[in-house]
Image 1 (cartoon, one colour):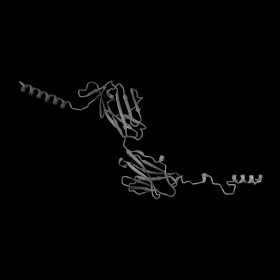
Image 2: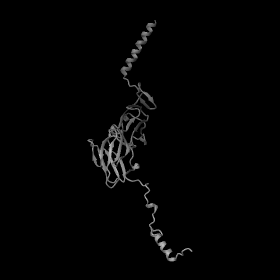
Image 3: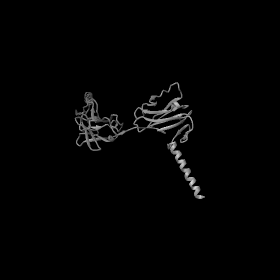
Image 4: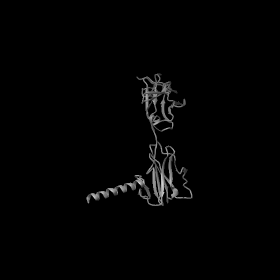
Length: 286
């Protein structure tokens, strides 16, 4: 016959199970305590916080490398162009003192700071951890110089009474300029001046465009206009407001633009010369 289990034995068995022990007194293992080799071990890069960077010429650039579980390993920065060790830990190993390694002990970020970057500094940089073998994460630094242009420059000829429309275009900027400043004769344009009819329209994006509009142009509106983006080089255009026709100009709406500038004396000489050849041809025919 089978063994009868008493009420006391059932209570003991439940008590052992509740304490993490089996009914035979041997500790039970939970799966959460077992290392199945699936948990990453050792340093690893956080690629979401170690990205490519676009920087402006002359303005400090920073490449960030975030490393989890670094332990006592060393982080180095290597420039791939010439396989040059730039920094190791916080020490700099290049004579180019523009390169600095920055690390806050309370973070996992190792930053390569490049002061006064130039376009030649563009290229691949590797953040490397001194494991065996070493592991690395590559990033691309693009150093750009924004280009500012004023359409139709460097000179524009405008009819009196028409609208001056100056279009300033900013290209190759990693971010839109925070502000664009317009000046006339080296003085900032006041859009609320008593003259009235002066306004600006700016469209920001990968290519930023700023339109300066001056209605009912008058001779006093002639002079140099400068478009000065906050993060790019300024550009200047010379505007002439004309009271009559301009014989050597091309008219586009109210704006006159000399496509091939030529002096009046040279034009007169060419007309005279053509007239001489024409007379000579007639004499030859007769």
